[in-house]
Each structure stands twice: as C-alpha cells, then as structure tokens.
Amino acid sequence: MHRRGVILALSAALLTACSGGSSGGSAGPDKAGTSTPTVAPSPTPVALPALTGSYRVDLLVVKSDTKQQAAGSRVTRTWKFTPLCADPTCGVTLSRQAGWYSPNGTAGTRYFPSTATRTGDRYQGVEKRLTQCREPNGTVVTGKVQGTFTYTIDIVASTTGSRPTFTGTTTVVGSQAGTCKGLHQTFTFTGTPA
Image 1: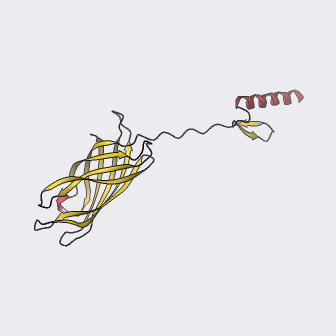
Image 2: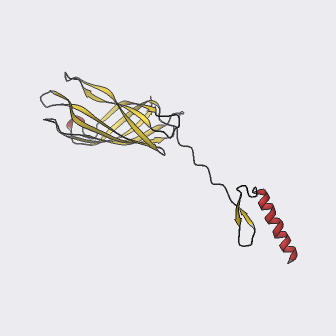
C-alpha cells in the first residue's frame, strides 16, 4: 500500500509539472487530493472576411403587390460596401443601386447609402428615405413617399478568391402618397464580387 501511495504521488507531481503547475494549467485538487490538468478552450473561429468593394447583386422578386415588378421578376444591381473600421467584425456602409425616376419621368438608377451592423457572418440594416413614384398619368411625385428597405445579408466563403460572396433577403415597403399606391415587396438575392 505504501508503494502504491508513492507511485500516485509521483504521477500527481508529473501531471502538475507537465501542465505548468499553478500557472493556469491546474484545476485544483480532486477527491484524491491530487491536481488534475485543465484543457484550454478552443479559440473562437475567425469570422469570414468583411464585405468590401463592389458586388453584382442578382435579385428575385418573391412577393409583390405591384405589376411594375411582379413576383418572379429579376433585376441585377451593383452594391458597394465600405467597412466602418479595419476589424472585419465592424459594420459597413452599403451604397445600394436602386431604381429612380428623374423629375421628367425618365427611369434610371441612383445609389442610396445605409449602415449595416455585423453579428457573426451576418449583416443587417435598414435604409429609410423619402423617395418618388410615377403616378398613373405619368407625373413623377418626388420626396413624398417614405421608402423603407430592410435587409439581411449572410456572408458565404468564396470558393474562387479571397473576397466572399453573399446571399440574403430584403423587404421593401413604400407608403401611399396622393395617387401613388403603397408598395410591399420581398426579394431574395445573391452577391458576387464585381
């Protein structure tokens, strides 16, 4: 019995020495009075790179209450991402290309900025702005319609380069103004580096 006690004491001493003694490698005495080593937790996985630069975004209308852009319609736009800091976990400024009517009724596009926050590998943001619509008689009403663009962007690891791709969903809601009807649309989208 005495010999067994000496072997146990030597084993405990080796474990303590191998685990760094009291410098953080020991969890303290166990029931037998010896120290048991602890295993350091795994480091948190590094997040995917931030979205930065220009992306081609292919959008699919999945729900819509307007004939101008009915469900099943597809549109391609350019979105530009500018990180708010050097840390990839920071948010970004998203400049989103969207349709726009000029005061003379000509259809075109403009870029509209918003800020997206990042949690894990997901960005979320809301763009609110006074926008415009074209009335049934062709008159363009500018600055009277409140547009709200709510989006979720999920970063996807790239298989071909260093910049990631992304997928996501967005909801667009426009208030009613005069003869301009309210608008409610839902899109899904994918983004690839431009």
